[in-house]
Image (tube, rainbow, N blue to C red):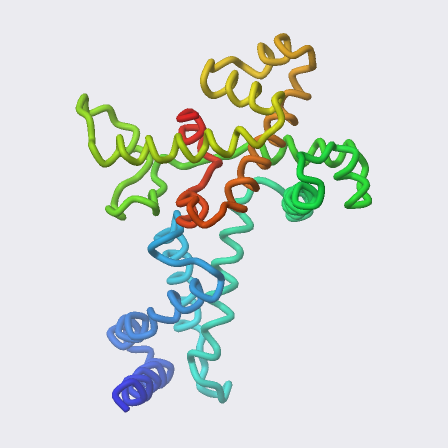
Length: 276
């Protein structure tokens, strides 16, 4: 009953603002309808406790909400929430599209290649070749290889939050600081992470193990790795992306004891793979 009364009060406030354009009512209306932003983000799959850049998305949603408040007209004959939701959603999606450096078609191709790799590995019990992936997707091999290069390019903001840490205020920038002291919880985390990664890597092809080891442990460049295994630098980039995707797939198919897969800890950060 209280929720229904609050909703009715909110609708009265936005109606009064639409009629009077009182600045105080405008501010009050924006505050009252803020839950719409979090509702839309939840429907899009974004949660405050497990997604990076949540506050950035909230800010964009608030901008969409403000536009909806300013342009709402009671003559539309609809409730404000019905009018506002698509505008908040559109603002958030526009922001996500602008921030993504890849065109949508290329992003979809990367996802399809990753899903194909996971499916084929499950069927064959091994890492599929580029040709097998291309045949499975009815795609040219060069497009598969280009998608692997795209998948290998990851941009991470130092201001992004680390959702798998208990303190939600921690960012990459803070996490990378050297405080010259050992953190027991971090030592335990790293040990557990290393055990899981080593177990997963033992299931990979030897060449993929070598590439990951040379890149993350020996810290060789792609060109240097190419000289070691006798392939071009661009090919190493493709093989590296394949290896990382394969490692993700293996971890996601864990037996239930794989805490990394269960907790959703991302593998795209090279800092994680350096524990191998």
